[in-house]
Every structure is written in structure tokens, then in C-alpha cells.
Figure 1 (cartoon, rainbow, N blue to C red):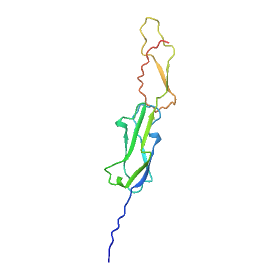
Figure 2 (cartoon, helix red, strand yellow):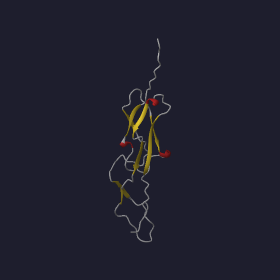
Figure 3 (tube, rainbow, N blue to C red):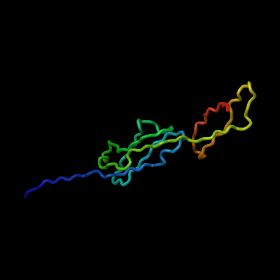
Figure 4 (cartoon, rainbow, N blue to C red):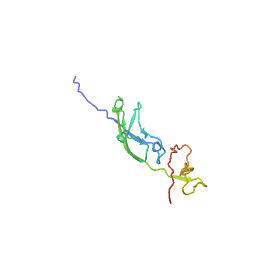
Length: 144
């Protein structure tokens, strides 16, 4: 009887990456954010996903941010999967449009000391009560 050796290969399963569009705001909100990515069609044990921000920049201020998703390399099951889809992504945080309206009746006579602080109201295009903004806007007098 002759026994022939036969080899076969187990190849990694392709797993598609999907980004949570709501994990990064479109407009500045004063908070730091982390993009969230999900795996679609993952089978077996869950494998941890690592999202790396461009050059370690905190995703907070108005800017464009490049992020990458990868499998956690020290996870023994990570070799069983190959990521497909959009593994690199750019998110952009845009300026928040605000309106600063001085309260009426404020003024002074030339030569007198400025009646600081001036009082004002800040309103947002989308009036979101949960929006946390630093209220330290410098509203000094402006000659028109």
C-alpha cells in the first residue's frame, strides 16, 4: 500500500469593512472623536479591529483626517481574515456656523471706559442643546 501525501491550504476569509458615518461629526463640536469601523460577514470568534488616526492626531478640530482600520495583530484569529473594502478613509470636520448677536441697548459715550464685558447671544445653524462649545468667545468692539 502506498500513501501519498496531499497538502491543502486554508486561505483567510475576506471580511468587508464598513465605517460608521455618524462616529465623526460633519461640523466642529468641540469634542474629540474616534472613528468606528465594523466588519461585515465575520464568522467564528470576534476579532478586534484597530482604527489608527493619521500621525496620531486627535480628531477634534476643523481639518481632514486620514484613518486606517486593521486587524489586531496579536489576536491569534486575525490571520484567519483578510480585510476588504475601504480600509483607509478620510473624514473631514468643517467649521461650525454660528451667529453672535449683541444684546440691544449696549453702548458708551466717546472717551468713557468700555463697558466690558459686552453681552451677546450665540446661536448655531442647527440649534443643538447637547452641543458643548467653549463660551469664551472674545467679543471686543469693532469699528464698522
